[in-house]
Amino acid sequence: MAQDAHAIRQNTLAEIITAPPTADASLTTYISERRAQINAHLLSKGAVLFRGFAVSDSAKFREIVRELCGEPSRYTEGSSERRQLGDAVYTSTEFPAQQTISLHNELSYTLRWPRRLCFCCPEAPASGGQTPLANGRRILTSLPPDLVAEFEERQICYVRNLRSEDVPGLGLSWQAVWEGDSREVVEAYCAREQISFEWRDDDSLWTSQVRPATATHPETGEKVWFNQADQFHPSNLGDDVAADLLELLGPDALPLNATFGDGAPIPGEMLDVVRETSWSEATAFDWQVGDFLVIDNMLVAHGRMPFEGPRRVLVAMA
Image 1: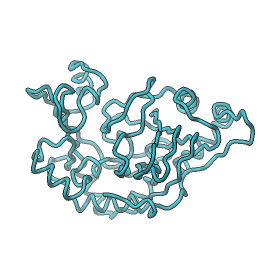
Image 2: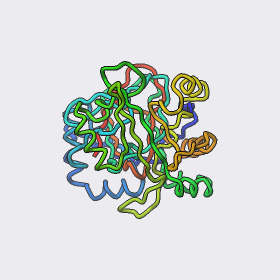
Image 3: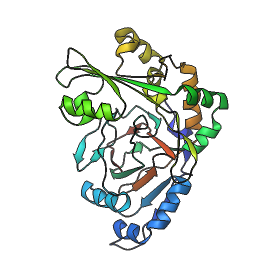
């Protein structure tokens, strides 16, 4: 579901903190001296943008993430293509520049999602490429109550068909998703995280997991819309692409799919309502080189707008 970048409101969500006018302004020091204030901003607004601190390389980014959030976590069970740059720092999702990445809460289909996401911008695009943010509390209250009730009652089943890295095909390999090539490690993980799985003859892997549609924030006690049903569902690709993919593979072999928890299909029209409601809450800012953004992954959904020119944004999860 493509969105016009000009239809997204300018930032009204992230708290913007600008560096003091000194040549040696250190964001690490700033955070250590104002940690309680920054945490309060995160719980209130859901996002904080630090501007003017010149965070433009992965080593400095990693240092600031550790100061603000602790050790970053790996992107285990991830669903998008990205490169690891070392010490759990990754490139942002490497989709083609002309594509919009839908609003989502990172890894919300897992049992152990990251509470915070950190981004920095070593290279800003010539135009576009914003990271839109949407308030999950407002998304929930803006959705039709009967739709929310049905999703809460029936839950969501996420189904994946993960190819082997040795076999060309669509979607991610299971080796990429688990950042390793041990079947035993994958099987132990699936057993621990309540994921049904089945190995295929071509070394591909089928997985299925049922998860809630909403979650309660452990600090604020607020309920939020917290799932990726619309992103996993084939309707997220657009009508023509979804129809071609279903004709080519059939519903049981899609790289990603989402159904209700009982296996019944989710009508695309319901997810269109979710997408439209989420985007109606979206705000954005233009990246500047050196920007550092932290979001509360439960309170705020994020995405990516199309862009022109080189764009480099790094991400860490904690």
